Image 1 (cartoon, helix red, strand yellow):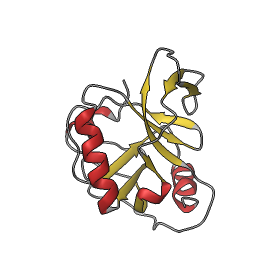
Image 2: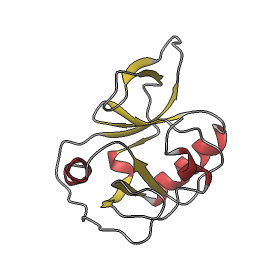
Image 3: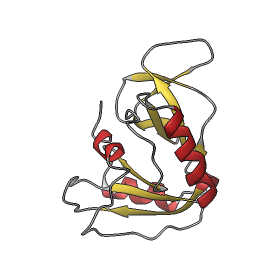
Image 4: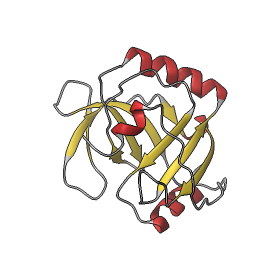
Length: 152
């Protein structure tokens, strides 16, 4: 389990006191939220974690993708997580879809994938209705800003 789990437990907590970089609607970054697990099964795709050789097995049908994201910013200097995080706000429709998905998949891993690499794979602990998602990974501020700036 990774650092992202506490964020799920409190509906993707809001981070105060941060430096924000505005979302820019350019191309290239691909974000997907999919069910994941640690063992192979028919129909699942093996994928590596970001900055790691560790792998997991992912359902290839994402529940959330780029067009579901209304805005994105990079934040640093929060009280809980000191490293840069990417805060995504889902559209109203995507928020409803994500709430239903999380309610139906409690205690299952959620793979958060950026550009074909798993950034995090927390366990869904409760229905998430806020429409706010925070991605905490092992990236630098510059890497996080590049992801946000290239998010479509």
